[in-house]
Image (cartoon, rainbow, N blue to C red; front, top):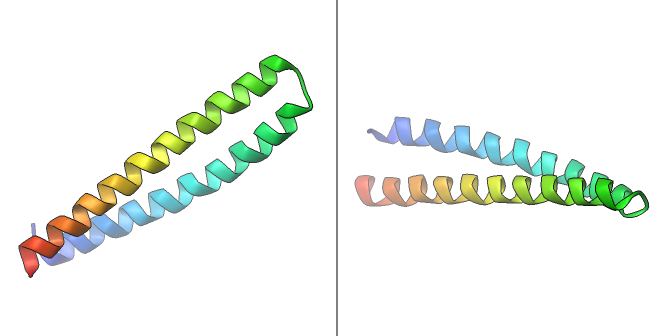
Length: 75
């Protein structure tokens, strides 16, 4: 893996993080709206938000690992 490949991979992860963060905003809006709705809708919105938060966490960790790898490989 060369520096260019790592940069491309990090850029791909950055885009995925931004896209997932936007989804989290939408999940949060649904969660807030669900608070005024039924318990079932609230629970569904909460589950979706947890899934999205977990996805953001995984994407950020992957990006950090790529960044750290590039630091040690190309320093």
